[in-house]
Amino acid sequence: MSAKAVIAILADLTKLHKTFNEIAVEKTEVVRKSDISALDVLIKKEGALIHQLRKLEQDRLLVVEQFLKGKGLVTEGVTMDQLIELAPKEEQPILTKLHRALMSEIDTLKKNNELNQQLIEDSLRFVNLSLDLMVPEPDEINYQRPAQKNHDLETKRSIFDSKA
Image 1 (tube, rainbow, N blue to C red):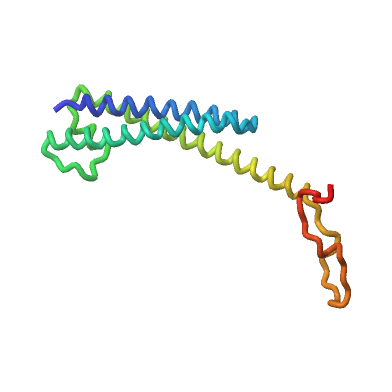
Image 2: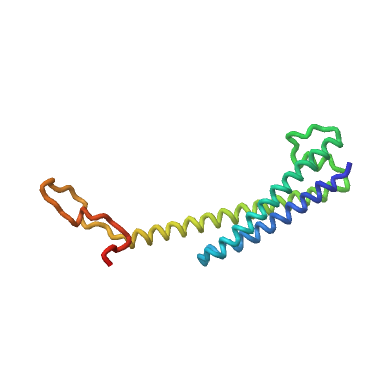
């Protein structure tokens, strides 16, 4: 039995992961520019791609299962290396090349996502620091005798000046 269906699915998965990587690079630039509306657009694009990825993954499972059943083998726990060995000799180099390309795209995507996560965490730290600098700290935080009343300490802290 031919592995052409497996080859087609792996090619589609590789192409889809390349698209994910392109979006991840765009996200890096958008996060650096702090362009929230552009980031929202990219996230929506990713949502559609994730739906495609789920569909392709289901198709891949079905195609691999059919390929293995055609060979009279058990379909559980088979690795890509084992699948390549079971393929006809003329299709083995193609499967190997596609497997390596897909793994490379996945690794690149992982690195891009880690970079984007770090950039977002840094942005959040900066926002929190900025907010902390905007909120005034009370001058004294000491215990006082219960008989003494200091109205300044009783007022609640707020970012907004309600007297304005």
